[in-house]
Image (cartoon, rainbow, N blue to C red; front, side, top):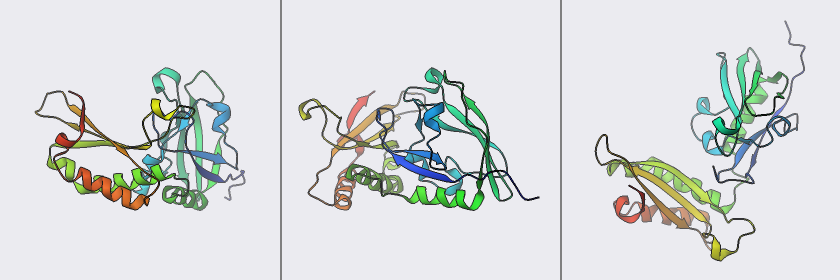
Length: 239
């Protein structure tokens, strides 16, 4: 039987959060028929970061199968346990994608109505958003390219380390340069000397310029990290 219920259009929009202390990467906000429905039901929340969209298609946050899955759509900049989050159950049913069984664990009880999408349009939009780099500022592009190089290098594993994150470091708005770090990229990794021991935390605080191409800067920063034992060249943050 043909589905007679209204079919919505999904648009995914990259947006750099106003408060990016928790995650400086752009969030990927779902717009339903052009409307940011999250503003009304979880206004303090942030959609999941674009870094979650870099793996295979089945791992993307909004990927669907015939098996229903409960997905977090937006979360606070603190913790879910502190300020709550918005969840939805999503599944594919023939040529439709269905979002329903919404849960709002914040102090706002409103939730969206059930939503249906055309599966072809939905999956095409997921693929488009995952490949979209048009929103990036130079610091984002350098961070993304550097992350790609480091993740595929196996370099940290050679030294018994685990790469835990590559993050763009933005200029703080309304803060003079003498009180903030210059724009750049932070690379963080852990080293565990022996099983059962506390991990040592290390980080590189790297800087970018605006007089070189982003590709060349990413290459130079990667070469610097890959030149020697990272435990010698990075800053020890915590033992």
